[in-house]
Length: 75
Image 1 (tube, rainbow, N blue to C red):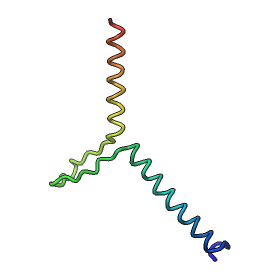
Image 2: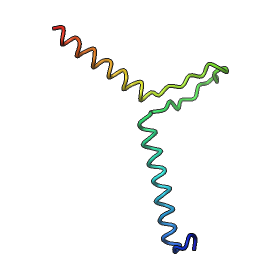
Image 3: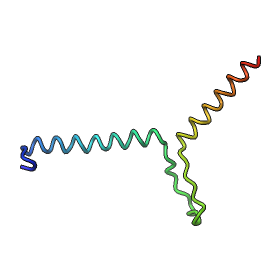
Image 4: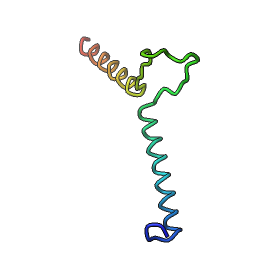
């Protein structure tokens, strides 16, 4: 018996912890929306640029909303 608990209880806790890790990874993946595309030609050293597409989309939406609000104030 690992850690002084029965095998069935140990296995339930193990499965629960693995499932929670998978769920947490999925939540982070959905929040940041990483670019998982693989380019045909790998970039040269120093050319690799990483961006957070989810963050960029939210920033663009926020800027567009501000632009619309400013246009409405002018009318």
